[in-house]
Image 1 (tube, rainbow, N blue to C red):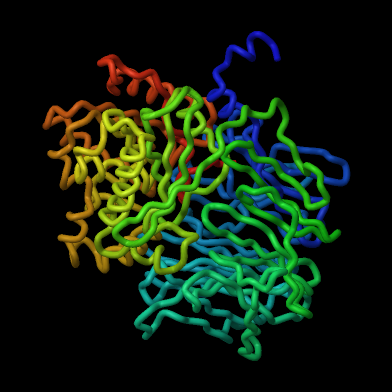
Image 2: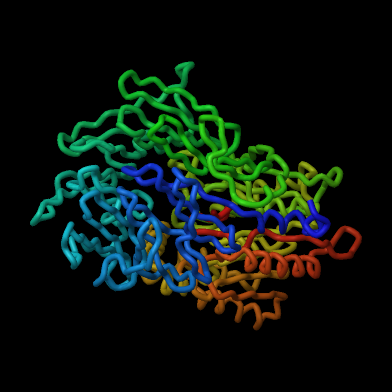
Length: 631
C-alpha cells in the first residue's frame, strides 16, 4: 500500500472501496447479467456479459441509479429514472449491448414505482402509485403501442410476477386496508380480456390477520404453480399454491437431524422447478438450503456464519450469493467455492465481530448486537445505532457506519426492537397504535443492561439512526431525555402530522395501519408518537441531516421541528443535501460523516471534562428498508 493510501483513515477506506451487488441474470440468457456498483464513486447500474467478462456502465446520473431489470431474453435493460432521488419517475430502457435510452412505456406519466413485470412475448405490466390515483396497473400487450389500465385501488399494491408463459399475472395488494399483511390476486391475461382467476386473502374477516405474498411462478412453460410466503404458523414460511386448481402444498422444512427450522424462511424456484432454494433467517444471521420437492429432502449449502444478503440459483446447479459478516466485507460468492464477482480496487478494511446479547424487555426478550472497540476495557462511550424500517432488522453483516464508530473507540449497540422482522409475526406486529413508544421501551431495556454490565459509560451515550431509526432518535431524545448525551438523526420523521400529509402514498398506507387511522381520525395517537410533541423536553445537542427531495421523510416536517428547536434555544445543527432518502454518492456520504465527526467532537463530553473525537454512523446510506450497506 502506498504512503498516500495508508494515510486515508480506515473508515474512509471502507466508504471509498468499490462494492458490487448480487448480479441478476436474464432467465433465457443466463450469460447476460446486471449489477449495481459504486466503482466510479456513485452507485450505478452495470451490464455484465459473463461469456466475455465484459462490463459496461449502463446509467450515469449525478445522484446515481439502483433500480433496474433485465428482460427475460436479455435484450433490454430497464431502469427507473427519477429526479434527484425523489423516487418519482418513469421506466426507461436501452439495449444490453449499449445504445440510446428510450422511454420504455410512452403514455405513462411519472409516478412512484409499484413494480414491473416483463413477459417473454413482449407483454409489459407497470405498477404505479400516486397520491391522486392510489395504485394503478397498466398492461401493454405484445405489439401494442399504448398501455391499458387494468387495475385501480386507493390502497397500496404492487406487481408481483408474470407466469413463465405470460398468461397469468400476480398482484400483491392491501385492499383490505392492512398494509402489514398483503393478499394475492391472480389475473388471466388473454388477447382481449383480463379476468380474476384466483384469490388468496388471509386478512379479510379474520381476528388475527396473516400475510401472504407471491414469491414467483414456477419457471416452466404452462406451469400454474406459485411459490407463496405465508404467516399461518406465526412466522414467514413458504408453500406451493396451484392457482388453477386451488391445491396448496405445505413444505415441511426440517434439517438433516429432523429439526424444524426456527425463525423466518423464504424460498425461490431453482431452474426446472424440481427443487427450491431456501433462505433461512434466524437471530440476525442467515443460511441457505436446497429443498427437493420429490422427497422433501432439505440439504444445507456451505455458507459461512454471517448474513446472506441475497442469493440466486444458476442453471448449472450452483448458487451465487452475497455474503458478509460484521467483521468481513461483502463478496459475491458461489457454492462452487469461488468468488463470482469482485469489485475493482482494494478490499475495504475489516472490523470487529458482533456479540449476541439477550435482554428481558417489557414485551419479551430483546436481541441486541454488540461490538466493543479494541482500546482496553470499558465502560466505553457507546453508540446505539437504531435500524430503520421499522419492518427490518439489524444483522451480523458488514456496514461501514458501525465500523467507523469502533475505529474511534466507541462501543456499538444495535437493537432488534419490537417491530423488527426475523423474530416471528407477533414480534413484528406488536408495533401498533403506540408507535415509536414501544420500540423505545426495548431500546431502554438494552441501554440499562449496557450501563449495568459495564459496557457503556452512562455519561457518553449517543442515540443515532436513519429513517425510522432517525425518527426513534428524535422521539427518544424527548421521551427519554435523561438517557442520552447526544442525538444524531438522519432523514427522520420529526413532525408526524406533517410527515403524513407530505409523504408518498405507500407510507401513508403503512401509517394508517400502524396507527389505526389517519391523523384526522386518531389525532391523539399521531401526537403521542410525534417527536415534535416532546421537543421541549430535549436537553442535549441534536444533529439532523435531511434530503431536500425525500418522499419518505419529507423536508417540511423536519423544518417544523428545527424551527421549534431554534425557538427553544436547544443546541442543534442541520445539514440539508440535494438528494432523497439518503445519497448514492460516496463523497456525499463521507462529507456527511465528517460533519457528524465535528459535531461529536464539539458536543460529547469525555470523563475528564474534555470532548471526545469520534465519528458517526453512515448517515447517507439509509434506504427504504432501513439502515445498512447500500450496493
